[in-house]
Amino acid sequence: MADNDVQELLKLSKQLLDSIDHKDWNTYTSLCDEELTAFEPEARGHLITGMDFHRFYFNMNPTGRPRQSTISSPMVSIMGEVALITYVRVVQAIDEHGHDSSAACEETRIWQKQDGEWQHVHFHRSII
Image (tube, rainbow, N blue to C red; front, side, top):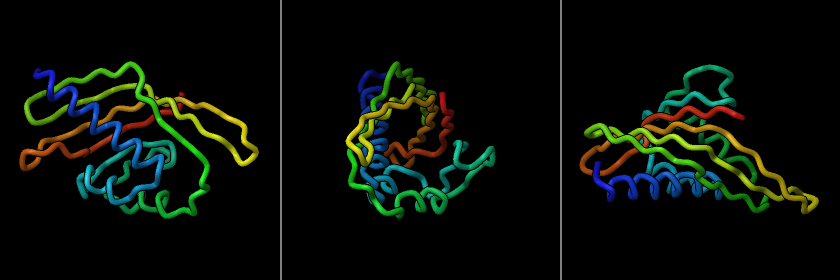
């Protein structure tokens, strides 16, 4: 496994989380396959396919409150044209009263090389 691939995948994963935190749909869609699949708490146990489900959360009125995600304890496995990244995502936020909070979730993200570029194709997120 090439160290530069590991570093690139970690960088792309951080860009993905930053796009979510900043509701940057253009960056998010540039990193994700159109047929992205996901298991996440918001889907209540259902497999989500495609981008429409995710677009809803990007289109919600932005609060303007600061939020940032940190990748903790990442593990990267590259298997040819597919990569698996697991980590704990720590999300820091400020509420409407100026109080800070932190939350954590476990994430597994799968990336696939398509036309020489890594694309995010599946994720599973569990709240801790």
